[in-house]
Image 1 (cartoon, rainbow over the protein chains, first blue to last red):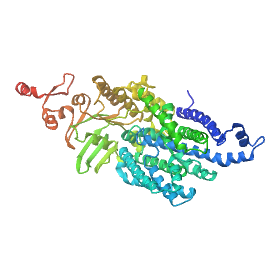
Image 2 (cartoon, each protein chain N blue to C red):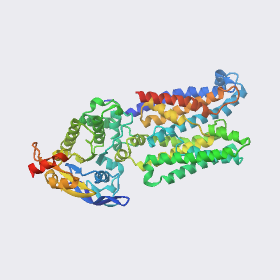
Image 3 (cartoon, rainbow over the protein chains, first blue to last red):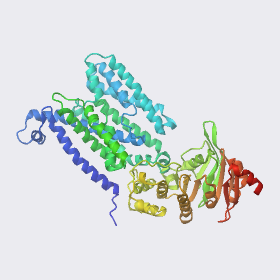
Length: 337
Length: 270
């Protein structure tokens, strides 16, 4: 007789441990990297407080790099999870976390905030959050009732809302000519530089319950893949699960987008990559996306800080430059099999 | 004991009635087949029995209890449903998919215990796919997939199994295999089998009771010999048929008559 430990738990523990072991070096690397290159020993001393600690470096590591790395971790986790959920929900491999117009809505909010001269936090963040939540409400209203379950209606209304928002964004950008244009563009490309420890804790408090909830819904997501009819006759409350997934994911993505702008490709590449690696079981993929997506964005952000000679580049450039070719490679490989 | 009892259900899509005042009862442990032309409401009737569609009027009782009184999980433990189109484009293994049928018996995360594994194993053996256990679903043939979905349905340990045209796209051997499986399910496990079919001959050979639908109304219900008469079938399907007694037993055999043979048939057989 084998011990009554479910098979899934064992796999889950193994994979979580493995990914955690990958995440830790990524976090350390993220803390080590800065405008002055990568310093391993000095940062190690600053972290442990041992040896002759450089007090300036100590401050840089703890007050600037630590919140930034944590923010990258949280945003990477959220965007990967968002992609995973929407790919399952819409049964469309090209779905990404911004698919319901969250990106467009929050961008309009943020741009209006920037144009109104609000401070970065909480002003612009709140404006962006309000923008994305309002697009979510519009989408839910448009697709309310019976049709909400039909995936194509959700997909199409999302695409349309996004298209409309893009037009508004272009309009706002074209009438802006002063220095504010730069901060708008930076926001649109994704920017992790404006992080403070306090804000990161607030974000963690908002996101962690969502992570747990999505994990609890992970087996329902597996069943959703079997199609509406089979899922329902296997005991799944389709409407309830769909709505819970939609609202939770949109809320998470809205919260992160309002902090750091639009970071593309994380939500598209990471879930597909992990699915090819670990199989289609969402009970494994949800925790894997949290850890793997976090590690991916931490590393991308590190490159965004180290690669340029001076200053830094928006992390969205790196995620797309690394992600797009990787994605095409995976697509080609999975087709030829 | 009646497994399914339907009283005066009516279902509209827009203004068009798809089911028009349907009443029927299906006895426990029988093989029941629903026949009818395309668009006659067969699939909608199946979805109404399985609780996917709610009828606008009327009452559906499952094992003597109104459908609304079931929780989703309890209904899934009573009825398993196999729709016409089954999804195939994902990478679950056969075992993983079959285990999903245990969901109504499990907690929210679907963590399987030894009992679940045992039941999945038995289901796999019952439909004869144990050699495929570790294979991926998207690499199997249509007939194998159909059997695997039946095994998944069996994992729910249902009292009633509903199948919407399970043999539609299968070759001859797979068709008879699926039908034999359903017959064994009925005789060995006492499961009530309800099936939508286009194949009149298979229905005649396996079903104890037939229901003939046309435009949302019941044309006739009863034993194959009662329902599958030349007059009733030709009127319902609007085509010329040739019907004789099947040499295998006491049930009719139906053949289509192409246009070029119509004169011959009238001359030879009256």
